[in-house]
Image (cartoon, rainbow, N blue to C red):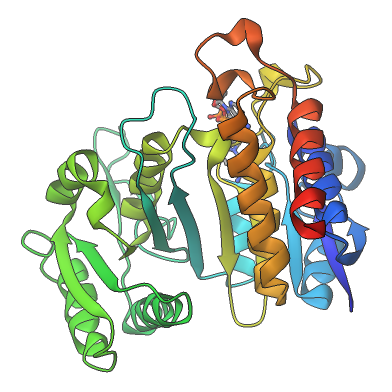
Length: 345
Ligand SMILES: NC(=O)c1ccc[n+]([C@@H]2O[C@H](COP(=O)([O-])OP(=O)(O)OC[C@H]3O[C@@H](n4cnc5c(N)ncnc54)[C@H](O)[C@@H]3O)[C@@H](O)[C@H]2O)c1
């Protein structure tokens, strides 16, 4: 079976890491027709907007996209192109797995396997923020939590846990202080958990969760939370498993999904063949699983793991002695070769 997927190379390091992800997907033998669409700085120059309608139209048509990071150009009118994309397409669930790959330099734990499910459309990212007085001595930002979006994301977390045979959902909040917003989110979590007796449910206050994740991250499985807490906790989890170079993500809505690395466009590394493409490669693996090519997606995960544990083709962020590191293209080629070996074995 062949698929049509929108491919957004993005800005800065984006095109170089996306190229490696495409190479690795090709190594799986899954046939994909990539529809390349430009968003970000290049699009701003050509179309006067970093998010042209043709990008949105392509994703709506193909239903699936693989995306590199995008710089939000100054003066583009967008607070963030990435946040705008998620909002316009109602990609309400942001999935960020954090899995330990043994062999990564300086790992504090060797057994983490958790997935953060972050609400992507409201909370403190609703953009309702202003100064209270003319002298700008005070400002306020409004946190919007609705039953509709909370039910949708919490149900998504439980369904995901069931589908991926995960045992527990932990809901993170600050309902002891934010009694209405976080209180509503927690109340809905408790209600929905009753419909999933096969999945364990617990809740944690955000500050306690930060400490627990640093001390005992291996106790957690699926974590569901609101927009800002999810943003912060997922970077914490990325740090626990070796940094942004190994942090993939999916943004999922009703029948639409955009896969991208968690990190940004790291402009200072543009064209240097230096950064780690694995977060984008692993995002492409998530995409294959989403498309139904589960075995091929899992082969990519295994290939990344084996290349890391062999330790001879690693980028600077994964290795103790950066003098022994390889570049973006070299690690991409090593993963692609390993994928072929695993699938032909
Ligand atoms: N989803 C997205 O497209 C997205 C996400 C975050 C930031 N951004 C944008 O990216 C631009 C740069 O943001 P930033 O500098 O704050 O964050 P960044 O993630 O681009 O880079 C921060 C640092 O993390 C490290 N890093 C990032 N990716 C790496 C990789 N693949 N391999 C190895 N090291 C890596 C580098 O040391 C880099 O200097 C901004 O314009 C921001 O808006 C986009």
